[in-house]
Length: 446
Image 1 (cartoon, helix red, strand yellow):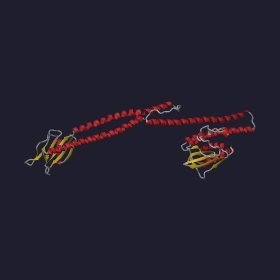
Image 2 (cartoon, helix red, strand yellow):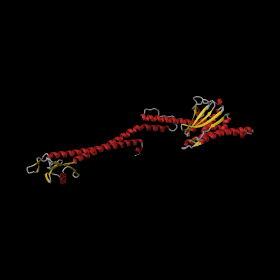
Image 3 (cartoon, one colour):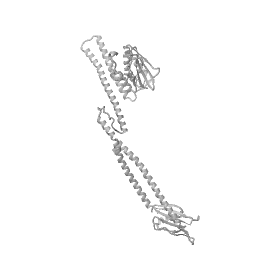
Image 4 (cartoon, helix red, strand yellow):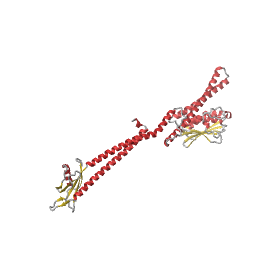
């Protein structure tokens, strides 16, 4: 029975079941038609015999009904009675039960009568040559031959149906097994590859159309998985490197502080380096944790965008000012609900503000609104802008401009982390065209 729990077994069972229902209907219909045909033949024979017997009747000079030539009353399957009122004109040899049934049917005058034991059918025909009833002819026919024919036909059709179903079972099992064999081979191949063979593909081998399409779909899925794994591996490597750098600065400064006495100014600068490095590590880790929470939460929360913008304005205005620019946050006129917690919105926008503050010449602008059923935030700076063709490459982990040209010490992870968190929360971050500086569009679920 375990075999019929597989796809092969279920398809075979379905084919056999449907065929069994169709064959059962055909067997039933055939036997009913055969039974109806045999009954029609018996009734026709009874009527013919009765009509032939009626032609032999005549009225003698004594006024009684007589028979010119009696039928062969010795034949078991051709019995004929002739009754003239209560008088029996012709009576063949027959069992008492059949004779009583014939007399009873003659009294009724017309119609059929069937007996179960013995299996006999009778027919009565009134003789009326001039409109007056002269007598009644009753014929009988044994149904044993027809019953045997019906039984043989029923047994034969059932046996034939069983053979057909058995043959169908075997053919379906073999045919479906051969049809599913390439899928089993693909399954074994994929299991043999293991977790490390992410570069293997099913390729374009000669397969049926459906299986070929399945193989191409699997290859495309494996391509996306491989790309995602490579992206994750690259991001992890960059994060490890970037976390190691501030940690090394912290350890170096603390080691120098412990080895020799330093002036208050040097000590203050060392503390600033430690705080800045620790803050950089904290931002990276918090962004990753927020992305992990957004990916795992079914309901990521709900908040007002104005809350996140107010917090960003307070926390990032001094940082933007340190780069010689000002932060301008344009609040929406009314409530603007977003389908995320306020801290996740802040984590998405913060790396964009950090990037904009480094390139801005005088002002960084943040504006929020709604479009196409989504909440949109635009982060704009009046710096040199994005070079053509780099709209997507700047989101790669570690991608950044020339340090000697732009003059800042960024790690190239901010934009990658921002997009990662936005997509984990059901949104996206992308570059939009702008003639004056760079503009990043943040799309978040409403």
